[in-house]
Length: 188
Image 1: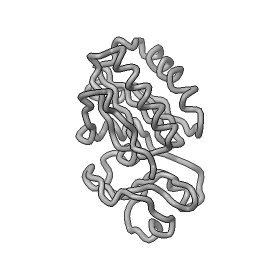
Image 2: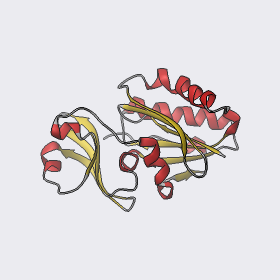
Image 3: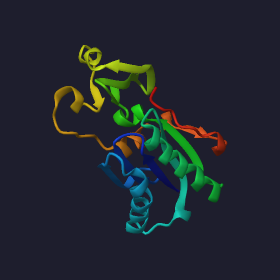
Image 4: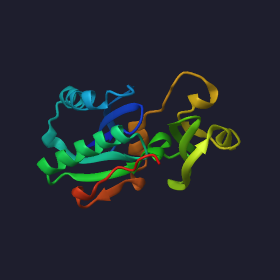
């Protein structure tokens, strides 16, 4: 069975294909606001490159947020429409912050603008204290940092493999039993 993994919830577009044992192929790029334009063509490229079709997809894992209003809706909407056309496909969600750090422990965060971030302390896949933080607050945390770390150190944007992170934390996937109830978690 093939699992399609999708993250459109922030500045990255990450798409991957996995089987039961490993990530087969993936695409990840910082694209800012082109998620809707690139999502379907990049999925098609991954499937074609690996000799697969949409009929081979048995599961979809999509980030539910927190994240940008439009970006999060793109991944969720694609997943809902796909599930309607392929009702046997299992749907799972994962929190965006967990996708940034995989099986690691630490503090994950994404840019909330105005010198603020949306983040959480994550230990053993458990999210604690998920909220908006000021940059000054997180500078004082003595934890490993994941996500938009460039906001702290001014270096170039660099992210780990979002798809591998999501694949590595299957225990944090949440099964969606009724796809019509699937809704994004927005930044607040």
